[in-house]
Image 1 (cartoon, rainbow, N blue to C red):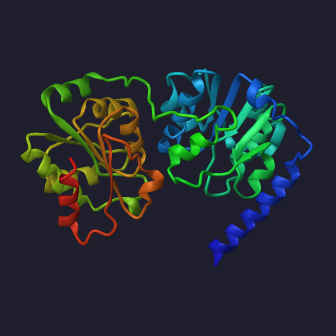
Image 2 (image 1 turned 135 degrees about the vertical axis):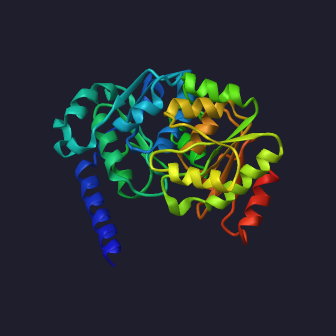
Image 3 (image 1 turned 30 degrees about the vertical axis):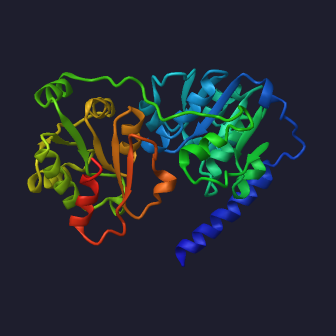
Length: 341
């Protein structure tokens, strides 16, 4: 009951905010074809969400000056991205000041005479990025998803494609008012390796990255599935390198204790990317490391648990997206994964 009340109040607040910033008399559509600068707003603090903006940069970079406005924690994910003219952190906690917010005042000139794209969710209303896009695009043209109250804050509200649910395709579709048939792929800067990673790679000429963790435990397949996969890799002469993120060392050690391979040392984002780029295959859950593996061009076998593959997966070869939700037991899961390695 409490959750439903919170959702209701959030939607009421969203409509109130949208009506407050609704500007039906604005006519900035001419900027869609004349503006050379595009500012993409995505202020979520998750690694995977940040990486899912990279196809938009690729789609725009050949014809436009592209800037990204992101959560401060995601600057490390996107810095050095090819084709990016500017990367700008945005601190949300001062947004209640509106046009007087420090970051709004600092970044507002970017949107002047340009196009601002609100790259928020195309399935659920999200008021904060819609408001940020509206504030930065006060003297430009604001484009974003036609979702809930947010559509009132967009000068051009883009309805989702009816033929796909895929996140990359839907986010690229947001650019359709700006460029014809926008196309782009996941991308990452050339990973910066370290001596520790180089030693690990040199010691194991043929290896696979096995990442059993993930931000939300409820979306992880059982650790025993990864243990079984490491045994199958080892039997094929491939060394499983088990990687882990903050708070996941015990999980990685459990996989190693009941499986096979070696435990990776603590890795930064670049070190993990460097390992993935040099691996024969990456096996992971549907989580940030999955998007990173795809972005660096590694063959990725992603395991989905209670999440829609058609929305969050990367179905193009050489990647393999497997929904294990309805498999009867761990043995069946392991068999299904190993046959696709």
